Length: 231
Image (cartoon, rainbow, N blue to C red; front, side, top):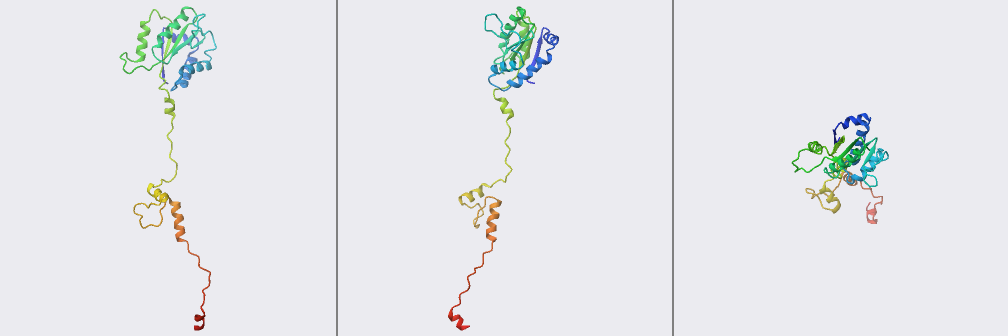
């Protein structure tokens, strides 16, 4: 599992009361499988949430008359987030807080990437989330679940699934013998040989030719008249 779930302000209890614990975990598992190692995560995210029926239920619109939408909405639980950078967590929290203050949702789920610069001195991503949630009070006060995804690098899924090509099950040909067979060059130590062979079958063929008996001539011996008289 390449994601971590963090609950704040009894968000976990709200999910259990709504009987959505298995569903939320199933959605996150599905997103992890769909998005791991991919490049165009935004479009794939919308497609995956639509397949899990999180974009057909309720109203995705955040503000009336404006084209601001949550990524998913179901049973008064909104999903928002982005995998482009960790810093999107604050934008997502603000968008969810607006819906919470308007009485539209009971809690929110934020999905962000856990990957940050290796040179960062702010500690682990989990520690940073806990500090920022505390610092954003009381501005951000809704119950929220933060999910940190580690979706790898683009193309990593193909590298992990790449299979090592097996060598074919055939005899290994000696390059020296191969050159001798193709180009007429005899291998080292074969100056007195009449033939150069590239494999066992070729050698057997030539040996068969050597061992083959020459047919006897059926032409009778001519007897000269002098020889006949002498006889």
